[in-house]
Image (cartoon, rainbow, N blue to C red; front, top):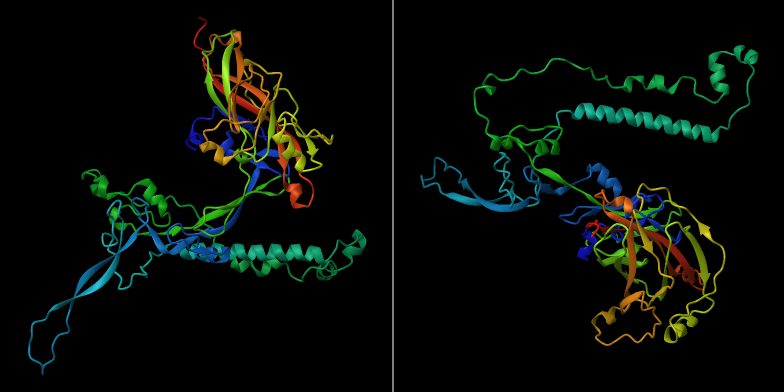
Length: 495
């Protein structure tokens, strides 16, 4: 899977107009469309500590300020601190007057301190006292602005409660009929407020005392020390900008003033399609588990395209391009390459009998289910800025790929599928993979341009929608169209 992190030479077009590789997109089985990271909404499922794997609900995470109470990060290198044990000498009690004077021996006592195995920082360097238990109880540094922060939090809670009451009052009391001006002026203000359903006093007047004192800008700053221009600066004893921003309420200037920070919680999130609001990715809630309950990654449902090789590109001349197609599904599919200006319409196909597909795979693989129903769903993507600068000669025949078979990867026997392939199109075939031959003709206008040569086409492939099978219906055969853009290389010259 290392090729997934390579440069994006083959990119798939999402409906939002963005181009992504197949490893960075999803395929919604309900919309039958490609969804990238911009077309899905993120939802937080659970919070957990990456060190101790403690899983907490959202209410407790807010009380703990999204930080673990047992694990700490190093303030210098931001790695996880470990607890180490040591021995500290303890003086015995002094003898009383009646007892004989004996030698006072030091008895060792087991103590614990925090230590970083990467940068060798320890809590003893910062002057933090050792603890007698391994679970911690380390003293925390107080925030000097805690009073101001609590006052602002309380004030905004009051504003939130007032806004909530107003919203509830509007739901309970419907809009009243319009009152003429002559009638309204005859009442006092208290009666008018009572008639329209409002309290006798405005709610903001009773909460005016809870408003904190606004901040006032000041031009007075502390003067620089006298030795700042005379003494040399030792950068090993001064904190970096990243270390200061890691603890913004204190922002220590010296290394010995740094304190260990509680490790922040991580989240397990799920992705949901913005159009149909179905999940395209949902992981297991257990922090130790790396499995997914739902994972509709595109490379599990859409054929993957790779560039095998391309001949040297010259303007106005044809060059051979070899592309490799891989079928990741458990069903046979038919791939057709269409021009780039083809509308991305999805035609639904329903199978009358599931056994019919099994019999067709054993006989002639060219005979696919052909019960096509109209009901086209058209959703044109947004315009993109990329313009292909080369012509691609498209084949006239289609390519058929058998279903994926994991055991076939380790089988040396030949595949007996009896495909009637076009020898001008199909170059190599094994299992669910096949290599086809295309021809690229760069435009003559690219002679003095050093940009990469980009070609594009629309790939139509058959997809078996198994969502209907969960509803006790027959599976549907869907012809999905995906637009691809390939970066095949650069020009090498005219000769």
